[in-house]
Image (cartoon, rainbow, N blue to C red; front, side, top):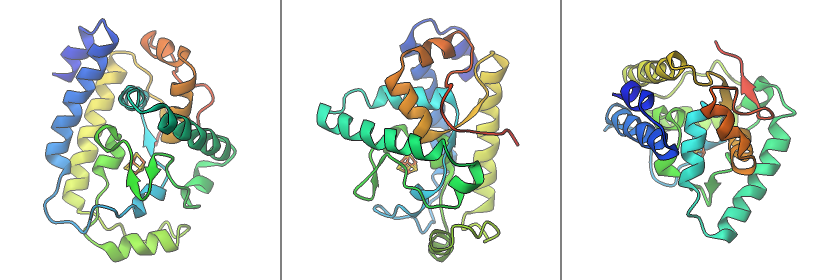
Length: 209
Ligand code: SF4
């Protein structure tokens, strides 16, 4: 369904609608019933978030209705974030507890439009989250998620990514905050993506594994 919708998309809104449908389907597998996740807990929002360009543009258009003062504050946080993380290696960023610029008062300010990596993230062990937060350089610490659900989500993420790649769209893995900053401040990013070119030229990116 995603492939057909993307292949026939001609207007900007068609691309975002295709991704919105994909996200709705993704949430059916990424919403486990038994977790330690609670509203107001944001321990995982201090991790580096990897994302794809189409997710960043979906997020950017979802932020358009924000009141100007909130938009200005967000742009300020994004600029500071982008300046910081583009000077770090992926490892340095991943081990420093840098808050996501969309985090406001301990809550995600763009929850409905957050990327798949955030939607996949969950925990069945709050102590594991606390340990990771308090020991960000301990990358060997056991994850606190349900392996089966995490695996299903990862499979779906790969499937959707493969569809965009098959249709020629940017396969680069970008760091969320720095890519969102670029998307919101440079309209040429969207034009490049539509032309099946590399969307973001200054954002931090993660080498494909
Ligand atoms: S996008 Fe939202 S859920 Fe994801 S890390 Fe940022 S604040 Fe957290």
